[in-house]
Image (cartoon, rainbow over all chains, first blue to last red; front, top):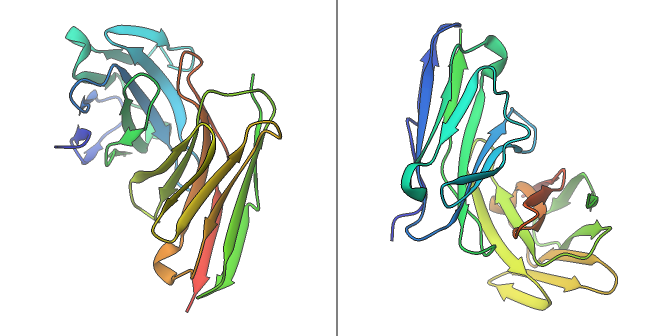
Length: 112
Length: 108
């Protein structure tokens, strides 16, 4: 079975440009997380979904970040406009009913 | 909010040594996860524990619910075990709480 799939793996954009990341969780997993990870740091939660509902988006910078999880399956994280400080790895993870966590490989964003 | 403390923050050991990484937390939890992240790599789940002990190859994880403490042990450590090991609490309605991680280096 495929794991958590993220795309793109790498993205380089200029500041003020928009960018979108896509996550396909493991089939049937109800919980989906988006994390931001800076170099040498631990993951920081951006948003957590239970099915299609965003149950924790308190750390999501809503002026420029948005996310959606239509139909409670795939999810998209968007940044518009991107800033230099947004350069990081964006991780998606999923789990089933609070069980084992599965992480994607991450999407590495570089903002120039 | 649950507080989680990992120790040590950094650990350098020689190949073959027995490694222990500790995780303590302040509030009762439903589950505890141990994750591994190699430099520049993705995050892999090693264990999910709610009680007792689990073993996978050279890795052993234990949890003491009463003492609110978990340990991750690596037997016969190898340079490929060099990674960051992260203790994560929860996973249910309260979401996840990440420890700061333990940077492990195993020297040949």
